[in-house]
Length: 369
Length: 269
Image (tube, rainbow over all chains, first blue to last red; front, side, top):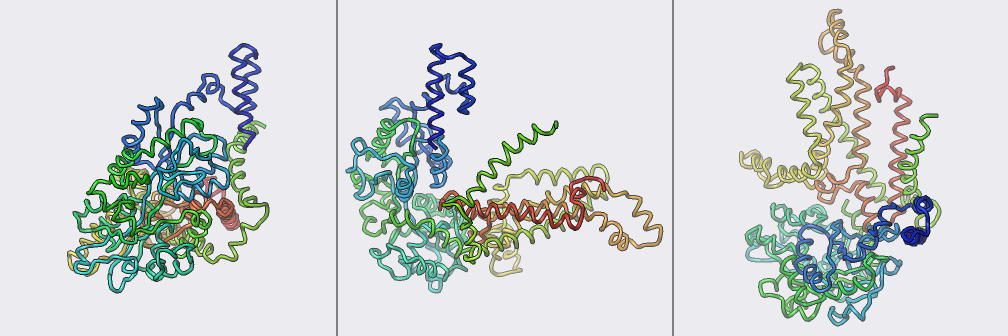
């Protein structure tokens, strides 16, 4: 959409000329009408004001409160730039559409690792400047060209301790075994995590999960399809367990603590074979605050103490290896990168998901529909 | 001549953006009709379309029947009672779709009010699975659609002259015969209008099937949304949208062969 960029530039230079008196009002308005730009926003310098703040695009809800207390306040104090939030949820299609339209309003998107790889390849993201952002403050392998991991989240399942008193399930094989462990199950609707769980249940060892045998995973899912319900959001997952609709439910790890509290400890989290998902902070191409400011912001989010603050508030696990040892005891069980869990989890492969994600999601949806 | 500016505005602000999106159906990832091929090769797409149509047809049937009963009752009431009923219908019209969906989940869940009453009174042993399946979706959708069904029917029934029924009775017909041969045919435009309205709106339903279906009732609107936002296959999404749009046009065309569409939308014959 280079035309849009050109017109924007045209409008700005025209505004400067108009202010200096070099261009008459009529001509300026005419140019603006051509460029399709609201004249007020250009004259009053709105566009320049946008450059002096960071807009973090996240998923809303608690995220705003937690990002503010963990990252936002501290960054504003250091740099003087306020941090604002866009809570519409940066799905891959939305980021692509925003960059295509030429009207980029967010600086950093709190998205997934596979988004960083996929959108980076199609040219929709800014390259991360690793002279400002520190590669050593990220777990090895999770600092990509077009995105850097600030947090890990994950998928695991919670089980009914009352129902399975003597014989608690501990692996995905148990999860998929509806004969031995009766009752309903819940899985994630958009395939991520559910497919890996299915493969592990079918006997695939952690090292050979990727590249994923889609058909094998889908067949395994189909085998328990009639006993399974599927959730699309964290609150749905939580509700399904708290309402007693399932005896074993897959959840996002950041919800686990809340669920245990809501069910008075009746449902317990099982971290064995949990699937760790790398989040990624991405920068849509042409972000309003410019490269320098946004790199400073991302670098500030790598601080170990701030990541621990985020863990406390939001349940998202740090990706900075310095922070792993700092995880407080009561949260160790719920964090994928705490020492007790790091060896037990399966680390999701964002490259596979970047290449095959679309196909996998569609096949999954069609199988369960 | 005077209508031209309005027409131009409609084209610019409405038709042009819609065409722009639908154009993706034949231009993404490359120009051609290749996006339409999965309709014939992927049985899953056909299954999704069939699920959508089936759910919408059942919803339409149930909503129109219930709506008919409500409208008929309202027409035969007078004054305050009719106003009360109208108010209740309109209020349920205005409740947000998310609030409804979550309310149904709570009400019909395994430990919800309904099941608790049934199990507690000993009528059944295991709670019935009323949500997270197609049954739950139908309940949610019918609940949402009934006000949409009532209003055109009400408008139509209010226009029927009361004296025609009296005339029929005075000629010796019993009340059921009067209903069957006089009233029912006169309400045909209302029934058709109401059915069309409910069916077309149901086709686009997203939130209710997603929440109440437990992920197992996949309808077209949700599938299109996933293609746009998650899998970024915009061509397929636009192709399905085009299909829906032209499907609706085709439906209207077929209906127009059987009756004057103008009559359905209120014009006098």
